[in-house]
Length: 239
Image (cartoon, rainbow, N blue to C red):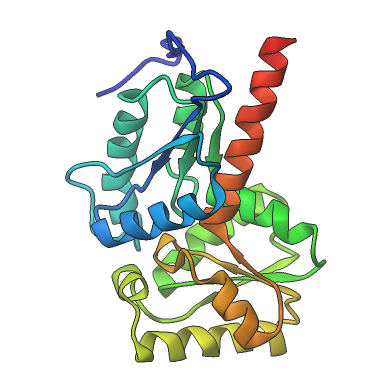
């Protein structure tokens, strides 16, 4: 489905202060990642806010290459515009997939994981690092960091495991993740680690304790920023 730039979708009815609604879009097709995102959301979202986690039918199980992105992005845009009426939207992918289109077409905040995580990391350290899954994801992440003006502050390292492997968790995957975090800290001087994959959602606290430095779950950061943005929009509308 294609939508013209002028066809901005305004929800007929927004949630009240007691019934706000948050939509988390997982652009890949992995149900395990959906479960991780729902767990993270339930830890940080107030009980009076309705949360839905959706992913597009037909999307790749993981988004690790430009080809995967080319398939996933239009499906994610269709999912966004097919679900108006939420108070905020989170794109739960460490990329800028569907952000531009979502903001153009929806009359509500649409928050990306990279921008949210970088905003939180900048509050904690001058130097930080993204630890992602596969090497093929690194160029896209660097492109988004450059757009945010963060390329000189932030190293990007791939742990060498796929998104599905990261989400499933295993001893081997943990060892690869630990090694990448140690390199970011010791070689690149990172004072904060950003977990740059939805497949790593929910791991920040455990890894922070293990490595002794702040670790940011990019998906949690995006959810928190979306909640704050929705709250501010509600205040502005009330005023």
